[in-house]
View 1 (cartoon, one colour):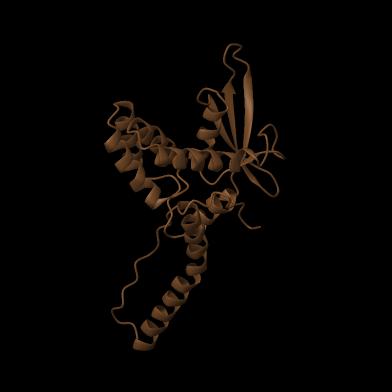
View 2: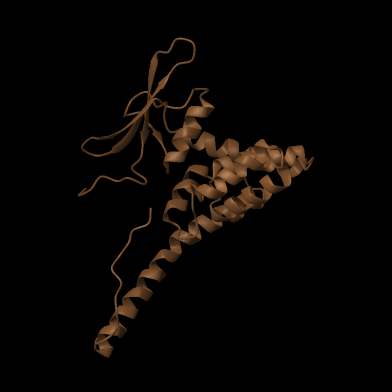
Length: 215
């Protein structure tokens, strides 16, 4: 989530005020370093083959890191999907790997990498991305069952909600609602069960990217 701010002009400001603003800016940048370091360290361990890391912690560290985009640019995501669908696997891999560089927790990019590398007979990379995809998904499913607010799946972006629905073998949601209680924020997705058409409610805890105000 990007927040816009007011543009400051240095024209007419005393030199000591400008110096103070620069100092505050430097402190803010330095304060962000530990969050990026945590994310980068987990990514480094994963890419070196250590898949015993806490993938839930990795996903949440991504949100705090300035160097991680968990969802990816929509144009790049569409291009990646199209390339995979058209079996242009070299192109699919190139785009997916670029998305992973920008956000290692991009589940769909890892899944497409696994599929594309398998088609290109690069089985080592296909296996790696398959294992990362599985670990990221398990890190969501292990947080609850989605049947109630109390057992909601914890997600770090809306895209993860749709991935969970797909993993559960359900069609795209018929409706989506934002719900607040005294402490938490949730997305409630209603999905029609295949065959019966019965509505299924799935709850997602979205505190990570939609925190309650004033708490």
